[in-house]
Image 1: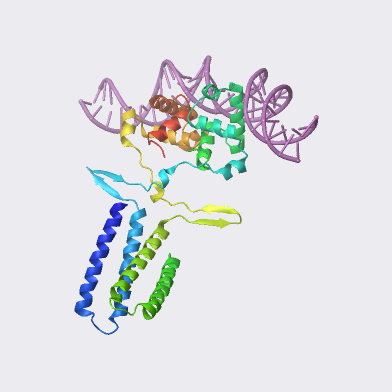
Image 2: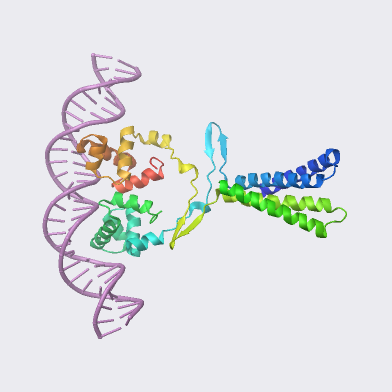
Length: 152
Length: 152
DNA sequence: CCGCGCGTCACCCGAAGGGGTGATTTCGGC
DNA sequence: GCCGAAATCACCCCTTCGGGTGACGCGCGG
């Protein structure tokens, strides 16, 4: 980021110098003022657009035959649960919790241990989750949960 | 996109007009020329950056109380399977295929239909997948498969 | 040619998951 | 104080899943 600012400053300086040069050589004419202004405007706008794109576009780096692509980390992709989906589906906090455990690949027994409840309770919750998600299997529930942004 | 170009043209025109006005009113001084140029440069660079960002930043649209957010499709996040992991685990193409079906939430029967093989075959494959991934359940296999970049 | 990896299919058995129903408790709101 | 939502637990029944084993055909490489 700082690199970009420095780069921009450098480019700007060079451009100004260049324009000054051009001005003194060929544009010392009547109305050169307007042309000069338009020229500056156009060039800097272009540079600005380029810079704006640079700031948000991924970069591709080639490293020892391995292509590494810098991904735009739009705020480290911190997971944010889609509250509207949750509400629309009527999922309770506990049910979401069990869904997360399921997505982690835990068995009913393991979930029961971690959630400090009986296996029957876990089964009840998971049944409700499957029902509310319209899923017939845990794997399907997980798939839908991820698609609906209910779980990471 | 075309909208942006038009918008930019309009803004540019207004700015030029504004600057002309300012120039005639207060900047008819010695050396106003450089100031004027710098001003144009700065403003248009800013506009350019803003425009550049606008072109690549997600947009939020409010529709009948429903907020729809355009998500930046970062090069559709093309999935690239980690071939080294596949080799390290000794997973065959068919097994990976079945793993994908499992991740999609399909049952053994459904997978058998889509893969045009018997349920028994699917069970054999899925058993091998679970074995090779060190998983005890399908959900766990999916979780590990994703973690190891074997499946999207 | 023979072995090996892969894909295919079968059968069995026990474990796990899923569907349905009913019941109790707890807690916050009306 | 009653109601409803949420959470808890139980039991039954059936399906699915997972583990184990065995077998067959095909193609490739030694």
